[in-house]
Length: 272
Image (cartoon, rainbow, N blue to C red; front, top):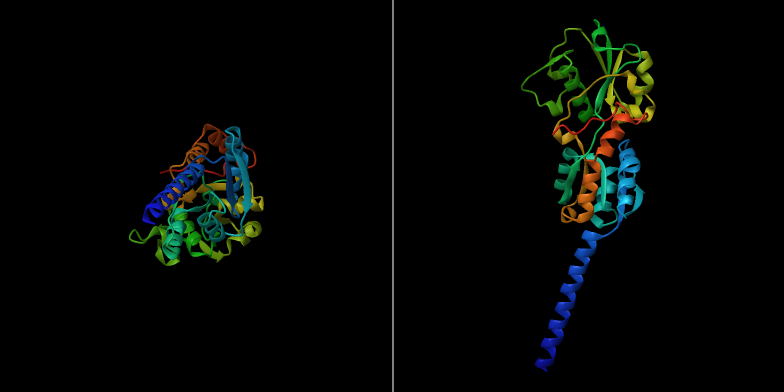
């Protein structure tokens, strides 16, 4: 009996190895890509630049909308999508730690920084005593706002403070006696008419129709806050992933963010 069992087992194992190999090859060389689109102004880069380039290379692209980053990450892990582009490394690190996942960055993308906006002033030199400044009230964007104010010299902060967690308590000098009001980022665009300056993520301003001519200065991105293309670790070296990476680093992408009338002045290239 054994002389029959061993050949069958060997044949079965051989079939499984071949099937697995074919699956890996299909994953590496597949020409249909499913792309996740969580809510983000950055999706315009996928729709206007990345998709056309990939289609020229013979790919079929399916765009899938998600309500949030967590849903998109879960779809990525399960194989429902192949990549998405709307999160930064700081968020990804927390997600991987909490879920014991191994999602990774494929490439950093052009990102929309936080800006100082004003519809009343045209440059930073017009700041005056007791001007009012709107600040986002969520911890991440609050820290970014105060770091930006320190960058332009309107305040000084404790040099030993963590720049990623700055609050009003870290301000050591406020030479213009600026008055800060912390509110939801989504409210800042509609309150700009009533205030001297407002700081908010550029994506919020873009979606609210605040023109880039009202943006007076932008933050210097920490590398962990630059947006990135997220993929499964096992897909990092696939042919399709390399093609996606090239599309985000292409001359077409650079030209688009510098010249497109709707987004010109909004995005900055990765600094790292």
